[in-house]
Image (tube, rainbow, N blue to C red):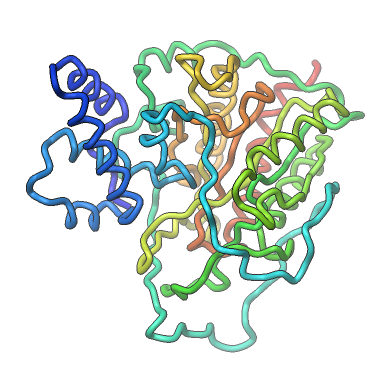
Length: 397
């Protein structure tokens, strides 16, 4: 997707200016609603501009482009809409039923393993032309330019109203999180949307009838979580991996259900200081989807994105959001140091994503629906090593 020419702060300033002008409130609300509607229907930047009519004013255009850029992590296209409706909880939007029902929802368990190979014995099957869409491979690391803030070796994309200087001041403070000894669980890996899945093959086309969801835990986000848990455990950390499918059979309410699961673990194991919610992104339109990928050591790796919450006005109920942001920035930096280009810019926005539950809560997006499971799992291996290196500094000395 094309980069957003307007930062979140610039749009925020435009909003404030419009509110100061008599009679502009209704115009702004109409502009915001139009932007959300257009961007929901046409998430790709180029398609959006093609559809914008000449009658739209500058403010409307800025809001529309800003909303389009928010298609990066799932559900965040609704950020602008939610900021002005007053509902700042993470929204769950209706989704198609998972494409597979080969396995019932799994219960909580501690497990590890690697992605099963899904390479066909012969040539990769081609999609029926009448249902064929295009997969575009892109480097979304931000190295080619964009509206980003450097954070060590990594980058941050700011969708909030706080300034770069304020962010720098927050990140200048030391990390306060610590881990206990490895005798008790230290890290919880879980999945709000466990049934999210990937393309079956590495190819330039996709089936437009696909849903990219599966209840088979050999095909979905559980595999990525398994690999991340395995690497962390091999590096000496005590990990619990919860494989509950909080988004099945109903997608709506998944964050409420996953919050309940996390609370139960924290109550049972107060030693848990890190909670990682493992997802994959979805980028594109009905006919073209984007695959964020780079090659590392001769193998394709799905680019990963760290998501962190901002609660500068206190409306989300996340008082320790600055600690989470420091953790998110430290992990983004560690991945970028170890494997330049593997990490997309840290996504920093007024979103909750259950990050009120611990000071070590992060949401990680492993690739998009256009990547393959093998690419995402390879990234989990690499991220696990970088995270292990970072967390060594949290252990008792």
